[in-house]
Image 1 (tube, rainbow, N blue to C red):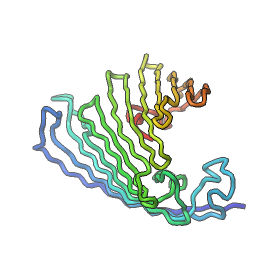
Image 2 (tube, helix red, strand yellow):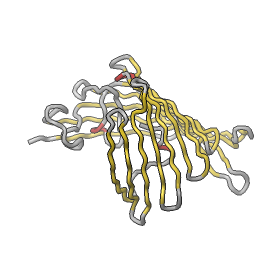
Image 3 (cartoon, helix red, strand yellow):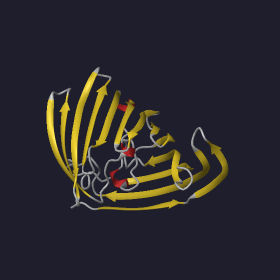
Image 4 (tube, rainbow, N blue to C red):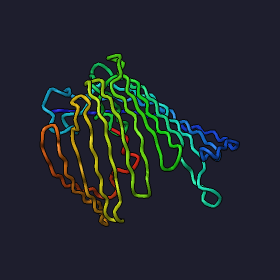
Length: 266
C-alpha cells in the first residue's frame, strides 16, 4: 500500500504602469504598458515511497515527488499598440520570466532541474536559477533565449537561443541552438509549419547533433482538423540508429497543442 499527499499555496499579484509618451515608428511602438507579476509558491508532499524505490511505469503514479519545493519568480511583459487607426491591438514586445527554485534533500536532484507550476509533483527537482526571454520587434519576427543555472552543481545545466519567422499567415519557420551542458550535448533544431488549407497542415523538423557531427533525426507530419479535434500522421527517421517510426496522434479540441510560440521551447 502506498500513500501520497501534497499541499501547496501560491501568492501572486500584478503591477502595471503605462507610458503614453513612448513612441517609435522604427520599432512600431505606440504607448508602452509594463506588466510585472511577482509570485511565490510553497509546496510540500509526503509518500511511503521515494522516486526510484520502484520501477516507474507511470509518472502520475510511481514518479510522484515527495519533499518540499519553493519557487519565487517574476514575470515581466512590455506591451504596445500596433495596427494603426481603427485597427489598434495589443502586442507583446518583450517578455522576461525569472525564477528561483529550491528543493529539499528529500525531493532530490536531477540533471536538468525544472519546476512545473501546474503539476509540482512531476517537476524535475533541484535548486536553480532560471530565466527566459522573448523579444518580438515585429509581428512576424521573434527572438528567444533561456538558461537554467544549477546551483547544486554550480554550472549552467541548459541554455538555448532561437529565432522564429512568420513568412506569411500560416507559414512559420524557426531555428534554435541548444546547449545541454549537464550531459555535454549540443544541438541545432529547425522546424517549419505550413497550412495547406483550413483543414490540413504540414510540419517538418530536423535536429543536428554537434557532438556526433551529423543530423540526428528528421520528422514530417500531416495534420487534419475535424470538428472534434485534430488527427495527425507523422514519420520520424533516426539517422543515428537508422530507424524509421510512424505515429498516429488524435488531439481533441480543448487540449494544449503546438502553435507558433511553441517552436522555441523545450
